[in-house]
Image 1: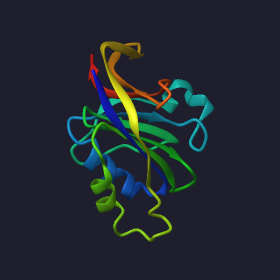
Image 2 (image 1 turned 180 degrees about the vertical axis):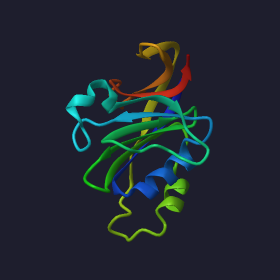
Image 3 (image 1 turned 90 degrees about the vertical axis):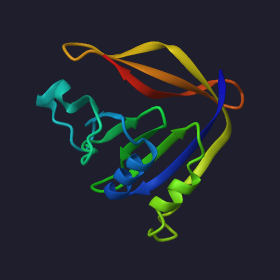
Amino acid sequence: MSETGYIYRIPETNGWNLTQLINKTVGQPGWTFGGAILWDFEPVMKSANLRPIKQIGQTYIDISGDFGHAFSQHAEVRWKRRGKEGYDVLVLSEQTQDETLQRVFSKETEETRKHRQLGESWKVQTNDELKIMQTGPNSRRLRYKTYHAPNGAVQFVRYTEVNS
């Protein structure tokens, strides 16, 4: 089955807007994971620098660390920390998110409200197989969709669902 994918990039935003964007695009039930590889990296913590896949809480979304993913069947939001409080964000969804982005960033100044749609002619393929992502005592397998660029090449894997 092939759908149309929408890809948006917000090159700089703050933690408050990031959590609002996750709430409005990913929703419930959703999952998140992330970690520290640069800004908050602690060598003695080893693999504890990475956050395991967890269900998104009703009142709190963990955006700590240097990068993260929040995802559900509705959308995936990916972020990378750009400094102490700034984030570079990517949104992948099979529905347009223009209205949601306008609401989340409506109070931003024109300069910081530079979200833009990267593409809508991308084809999305649903994969029935489960991708193994996390092993160990809390082993998780993820369902995913692949985003194909206009030339047909797979460019993104969008996570959609967690199966234990």
